[in-house]
Image (cartoon, rainbow, N blue to C red; front, side, top):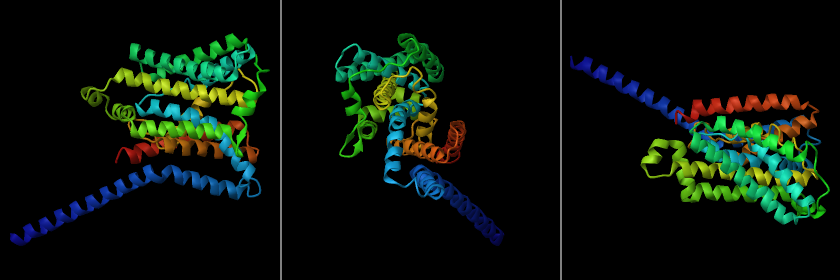
Amino acid sequence: MNMEKDDMTTQANAATLTAGTEQKAKLGLGSLWQKYGTLGILILLVVISSALSPQFFLTRDNLVQVLLQSSVMILLACGVFFTILIAGIDLSVGSMLALTGMVSAQLMVAGMPFWLAILLGGVLLGAMLGAINGVLVNVTQLHPFIITLGTMAIYRGVTLIISDARSVFGFDPRFSDIVAGRLLGIPVPVLIAVAVSGFLYFLARFTKLGRNIYALGGNAQAAWFSGINIKLHTLMVFIISGVCAGVAGVVTVARTGAAEPNAGTGFETFAIASAIIGGTSFFGGRGAVTGVVVGGLIIGVINNILNIMNVQSYYQQIVMGALIIGAVTADKLFGRKK
């Protein structure tokens, strides 16, 4: 009898040890994915792109172009990141980009100093549009997907109305020279993206507001019992998203030299893809601005190499959709287990 009991005990211990080993392996894989998955994807893409086009991709001018093309996407993605962090979404960022850019351009054409037009038409208007999204989410208690899907159409319609569906140009050339120029050989849009993402990294990582946003996304009910004002923080994340879209709108107008009523169409997909590929959990409560920046660079590298290979833009949309599905699936498989 004692020998049988010893055998059963040994078998139980072995089974427990095996289960523990398997669990540690799962945890290790999940941790590795969260820490290095996005960076690994970027490195892999750079290697593949270099192999596909060694004479063009790794040139200094092309790498600068990748950073320049990624700057607007990083700005939008950093704003969308905060809305996803609370298990929400902002589908209106592309339309906000177009509307803020159009208003800024019209203010400059009307004679307003470009710096004031940037402040009022870009930053302040972007904050107001984001606040409208936040207020509607709080008042209606509808999911942000529904609200921002509606405001995406509204803001685009307003842009077409105030512009009469025409481009606006002929503003102060100093605006493009400064905002789209270079400082110490570095494109200013890249510096703007670095400054904004750096500020938002500090906000998310080292401030009470950032900690509360993470807590809200992790468990809204627990956050409410902890005394966190859910409606206020929901409003704040949409204001952040609106400001980022406003800055992106100003940068876009400066780069193109004109305000286009259809600017930013479909950019919400790229922004969401940048955030999700960058490790932001679609279920809320987890992610980092640094990962979002890397995600934006991944989108930039993909678009760049496809352009170099003369691949039509339609295929780029297929790639973006596949990446979103793959990133969310990986998050569910690895992140949720952790």
